[in-house]
Length: 156
Image (cartoon, rainbow, N blue to C red; front, top):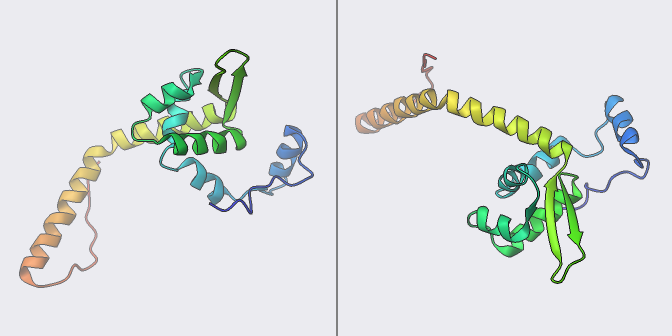
């Protein structure tokens, strides 16, 4: 991801400045850029784990299955930079570092829960639509015709 559009404009010094800009209808960062960042392979998983309370790097490394140390480090830095996570370093030997979600990330987490609940609610409908599509594709493939646009109704 390019870093070109991620600089916060110089006039944004406080949260109130940012809020005033939003209320005026301006977005200092395009929504697509923010969505790309949070929809990345690891960001959502990290936010979900961190939403339970402060979490250490090693715990994230164990919990977020398949993430490499490098990708975890980069994703944590990006989430911290975007204001989703707060990083706290404790002056111990070795240093203890914890990550905690910000109120903004907790708001995102609530939205993710809504999307998850929606997907559970509509899971059977999606499965039925897939079966209908696959069956129609197979029937048309065996008859030698190509799929034509049709409307397949799925009762909810």
